[in-house]
Length: 436
Image 1 (cartoon, helix red, strand yellow):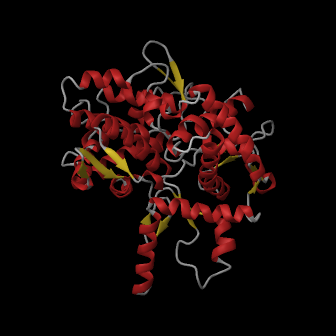
Image 2 (spheres, rainbow, N blue to C red; image 1 turned 60 degrees about the horizontal axis):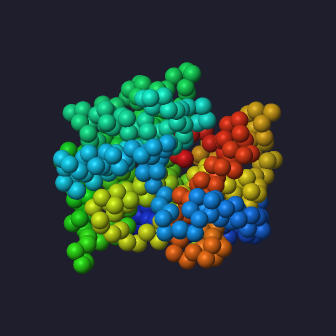
Image 3 (tube, rainbow, N blue to C red; image 1 turned 90 degrees about the vertical axis):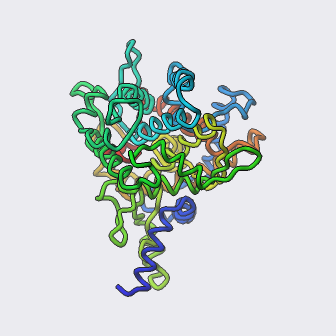
């Protein structure tokens, strides 16, 4: 490979780790959908209006017209399922810690909790002390909170997350803490545990971002150095936070993921429709990685979740959030399938219907149908958000608010209506504990 080719590959790797690349590459897939050129899905834009009405109804039911009270999409909500858990902790911690140290503790908790948030399956649930039972994201959040408060993630058993504590974690210890058993099975337990162990190594490898003790909360020191003060308020650009998450945490993702130039890219996947209609049709113009679509779902979910404590606890202002996209996961994507905006061409995945009595395909995260589904979800969330702003006459409604109050919640509610026995998505994903 000549020097110019190596340079091109390195540039593409760097590009695919940026936030703008997500929307740009997903837009290419969406453009193919408009021409009917996807391989696994048909696109029905006329169905979007029904989705908008459904989502608008949820917002009006839960918030009336007080759109400014809608919280952003963040892990914070999941911790507070059923009752408030974070506010009482903050009140307690603030008596003994400075605002910066309080925020660091919260960043520790939120970061490790988000990385445990890949789909756990329809069967798993966590029973809180006192008997309350929670499944899915809420169950994973509350389980991780209890683990944090028990010192599970700290080398000295304290209230923090650090490299020493993470490196000693095993699938067995994770399963025990999350109440996994034959009667309470969890999807992707091994992958989830490996992610935590890999996190410990990543934190140790970047002391400039995470300190000498390899602690997630120390990223606040890095952000402060890169920020600027205006009118007494620290302003930090989202791209700085993104740099920490995408570069500092790059080693945590499985080495089996898509690679380019020997670099594992994380949540980035080849899209066969792009290969067929773009790369192969224009080989002279194609570059290595031209058919790759980045999502970085867990990294973006992490960014959304960390922004809230940074702004609420420290009073900092995070700018540049417009580059963030909607999250391509099964609730947002399921909303589109359940309302017929996207229809799966069943003949293309006919061998992936494991239960002859259930009309639901089960596919691996790497399956090209899933890549199409996720790419379409990213752009459709932009379209739905724009339509909701117009429908509700709410021009300041942010994408993070739409995700929280409408599409993610709407995907969950329509799934419960359509499949009350499981409340699962219209397409099942074989979770490995690191995707979805």
